[in-house]
Amino acid sequence: MRQEQIDLKIYPIPVLRDNIIWVWVSGNQAVVVDPAVPEPVETFLKQKDLNLNSILQTHHHDDHIGGTRTLLKKWPKALVFASEKDKHRIPFQTNSVRDEECFKLLGCLVRVLAVPGHTKTHICFFVNAQKGISPILFSGDTLFSGGCGKLFEGSFSEMFKSLRKINSLPSKTKVYCAHEYTEANLKWASSILPDDKQISNRLIAVSKKRANGELSLPSNLEEERRSNLFIKARNVNEFTFLRIHKDNWQG
Image 1: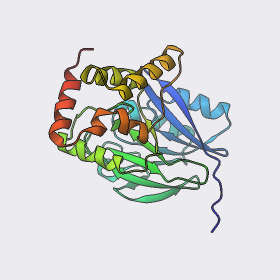
Image 2: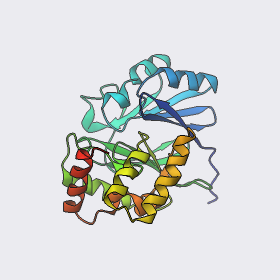
Image 3: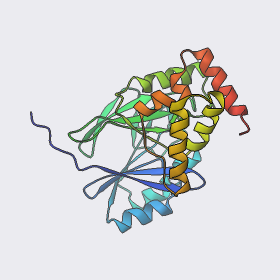
């Protein structure tokens, strides 16, 4: 069967200090990922004459769900996809999802990945490749560009397994994480491995982008495999050492 090409674009909305709200657009429909605050999203949607179709929530932290209630007042028919295990902390969810559940959204197949670590109930949304479009991962605060999220509720073992789960996705997967931390993450990685050319070269390129006011995101899984020490960790003990070192780093 011939696969139709999907008209899909993803736009960043930088908010707060370092959050990125991602807006996935197809036609006049929009899916918003982790809206920390409502006003910039409202402005963006109205300027582009878009309808808010759905909201994807990776976890319950306020800098990810803080704008959702207000957006739902403006677009009351919008769906909210969130973990069924987080109904008490994301009570406005309309579509409660579980690990490995799949659903169609804007003509694409979306797969839910449970990735405990940052929180016990954190999930990611993986969008399958379409004709002419690479696979996409909305990773929230689990996998960052050059790093990973802090452990607020989960264990080192859980986060290590969650990152390995993400690392099993296709290498061309574009990673849309929720914070612009790349430069700081790579500076830390370079302090661990100062002679690693993959890390140092990436740091130079990212620093130039940031100096010019550009985002370093999205990343891709192929790049993370080369220069993200948490993805490269061979076992949970190595991961634990790196995570503790990063938490205590004063660079």
